[in-house]
Image (tube, one colour):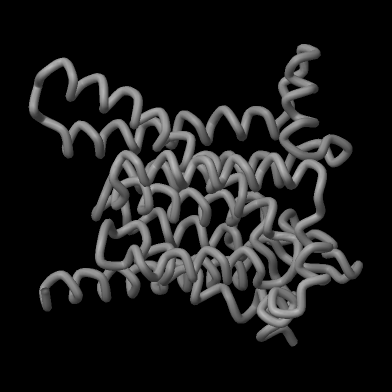
Length: 275
């Protein structure tokens, strides 16, 4: 037990340390394309930097390349897909329905490309984990791996997208994801590295000086999604997928911000820590 806890602490520390190094790279202007390329305007019209997302994605994903390579690849690939959308995406196409609608008309937007990439990232990570978990070799075992793996891949992609939907106010997506990571800390290392990187970037996010953007939100959700899928039994994956799918569909018609602002408890939690 002590050895396992020590491994968790080291994974959290690795997430914190890697994210800190990437934050330092931003402050010295050494990020790809220069720091100015990552500047945006937030919901209040104030200038903010998306480099927080780079720090989160790298802090959560890079240590996993050593601790859990498939999970690390999924987190980093989710971050890269988000970065492509952050730096070159269309601003007039919003939501899953908008991007899939454009795809149906023959246009591959960066948002649609991101959705496809998240699916591939999730499938690769979960397929690897399931093959390690299920080695009985009989037909029924292989069938379960195929069906439940698809559910797990959808959870990873859906979690990444859901984190992006929550990233509309300072600290909101991070609070939800970090809370979700706590019961997973005794399991796969993805939850621990994501927690560490998230804690490092949370103060500046709450101040409204930086934001996750698609780069960080996708990596954040993918990290928690991978950890959840690796820890949950098959039935748990389907239950989680149903919840994520419901929230995603609801978001197409209902504003999360409006619901939170109209619910006193949620409103207080959402505003906690903001400067």
